[in-house]
Image (cartoon, rainbow, N blue to C red; front, side):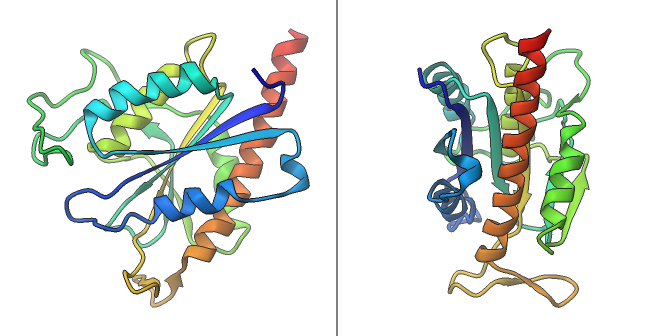
Amino acid sequence: MSDKLRVLVTGFGPFPGAPCNPTQPLVARLLRLRRPAFGDVELSGHIFPVTYAAIDRQLPELLAKRKPQALLMFGLASRTPCVRIETRARNAVTTIWPDADHAPVRKGSIARDADAMVFGPHTAKLLRAARGTGIDARPSRNAGSYLCNYLSWRAIEATASNSGPRLTAFIHVPPLARDGAPARKGNGRHITLDELVDAGEAMLMEMVKLTRQAARRSASS
């Protein structure tokens, strides 16, 4: 295993109602970044199929194989005009919409008798990093009840393990127009893929810094 700081960046593939998921090119662009701050960082990426079975199978495999110390996840919020930094995962799963495999869910919660789980105070620093690029970014307490929230829940669960990531975060991004032009926001401005990449880079750099700090604290304790 490399001595470099290991960071896993994830997105989602297409799903019913969203044949083009901007998190795919976003993750690809972030993995191609070459910055001095990433000189001791091992970046890897993964695109999840939008199915519950895929998350349940692939997330544990990724954590076991790549052993990321930080996990930065992106998902599409098709009705949101801004970037949303999620602060928690709700113990809820929709029974209305099936996943991309058309598999229905028959219960409305992820875990029995459990409250929502929070990502942690680092989400406020990610929010500041994103806003520093000029993008419209806002905190969110509701990651929905579909696959984005489900992945968030499973990722937060993983931080409780000694071998799991130290920090995780989930970022919802708005849709982009299929012809390459940005989707129009409610205030008349646009968010482009380049702007998403700039904001994603700022949040990735902040995650790297925060994970380094967490690692140093752990080593000195």
